[in-house]
Image (cartoon, rainbow, N blue to C red; front, side, top):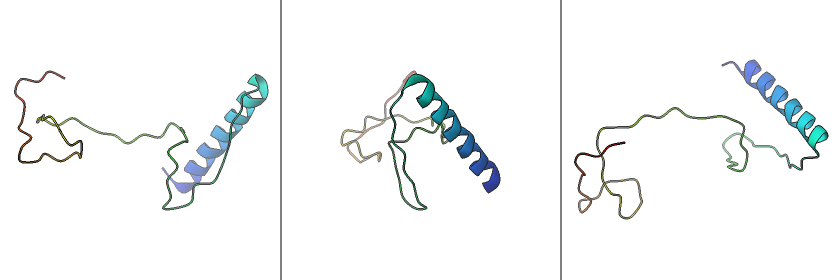
Length: 78
């Protein structure tokens, strides 16, 4: 997607939000997200594709890394 297409998409999304706010009396806040910054309170419908692997373990310390004491699990159905 080109920069122009992204800008167009953002403009259309803003117009749709403005229309919905005016027609439904919704409340919202807006702001600017600059390059390199993060705003996780905005739901703009963007997503990152992901896939599941073929290895499962219980992440006891919830750090996303399999540690030596965190053994794999067999026969897990997802």
